[in-house]
Image (cartoon, rainbow, N blue to C red; front, side, top):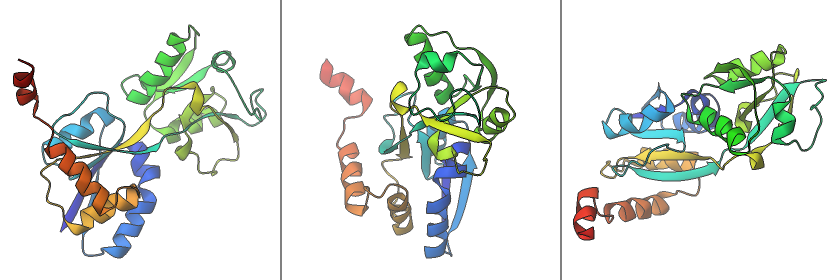
Length: 228
């Protein structure tokens, strides 16, 4: 068989590396394909049966045609060049961050929208000097001194000694990794095992329970009729 995963660059590069390696060792006969896409396009790929599973950082819109499983919290870190005035700090505020130019995520993506909106909600004026969609690009620009950045902590693998990081998860709205599935998908054993590798709390029993709960949920059309 084959397993098609629709995911963003962030999760393809960092979240999925361990589970994919474990999966290919357990199921060497299964072809596993990573389909990288913009986060907002991932649910549509699953709905259209172009992907078996979608892995993203939450969903901007509700997709009632899909079963969505919440994984772990995505922590965020402020990264600065070594020797920067914020380097070595245990805590920082939004005002502290806004004192310096920021290398941010593209406003087209949910992560970029969350960060910029948080500054606006707290009436803190931040200066974004560069925007990109790739965490590795952002880290490289910060290391070269173009600014500071807020990135998912999982994107920090310790490979760049020029950077210093401070946890800033509590400064921003909570984000979680989200797994998307069609409720009528065929529960192949290797697919169930992959989801358990990705989100251990969703073993086969827990996954079947989530799917059953979704199938019992009224469709949007039926729900509207019930309201009438």
